Image (cartoon, rainbow, N blue to C red; front, top):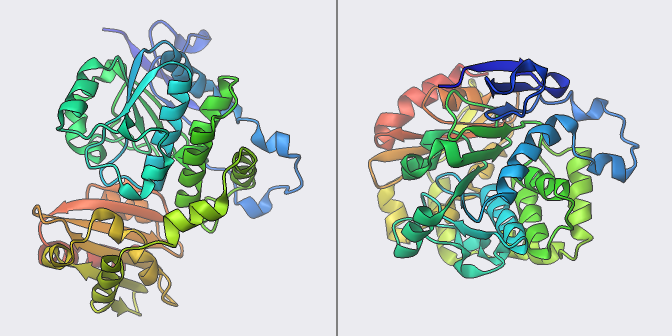
Length: 385
């Protein structure tokens, strides 16, 4: 078995290498993690030429080239994202699938939970999605010679897919902080990226290719989704430059807005009404939360997509530092979404319950119903500030 050790790559990047590489210049064959997030963006010089902003940071380019090398050597690639795929995971999958197939590499999207209907407009062909458990999904998993996990790296976050991913043939591209476990043997994890979609854009440009229109659409949707339409603290000058470059490839921002935010089924508004009726606050602890029980979601016919954005109503309450949404899944678990407006690190809070995410936005899937799960989570949140 190869000896594994950690060394420092470009700009202090941690690189775990096997005995063939070592510190004297071998190719990283395992886990590559981007450096610490940059200082607060307000402290950066803002007047930079756009071509400088579009240059891929070397600390990110170094491990991405290793991913690129393996992608271009593959014939059939399966793309995976986390349970309850969001805009960043779905858009990144759509972008990477379109680019791979423009290169003549067969791609399939197989997720642990269904691909969201909300983001199907990003796909270059609808049948690129092969749902897990279907004959098409099983065939794609059996035929793949490479797997790429996007927007997460941890086994619990890919659900039942975790046991279907051969580590030696699995890569990770993710902008979340590294956890204690990683699927696969090569992982690029760079929290300085505003979205995984930004990293997929970088991967395509490192190949020297023009970004296909479908890839530009997927990457743009990923970026818009994870930056909260360029409102969150992960919005950087560079991600604005990347978005501008994608718009220059023919993406219509008004169409994207309408598809993502301005069209909703009636059940989504009914769900919001019922969730708001459960709203509770603790002004002293500066926390607020809402709950949605399984029978409510079932009665309304609500899907996972209908819960997107609900927590923002809790987060918007003046004086709230930590916002939470408790949602029973109907399978004996409760999904808890966390958002932070202040100094509280909700990634750390979520990790206490087996979840994770970002400092400002995180989540956890916890065994038990709301009555069992909420009290310890609320207690922890009261001490998280």
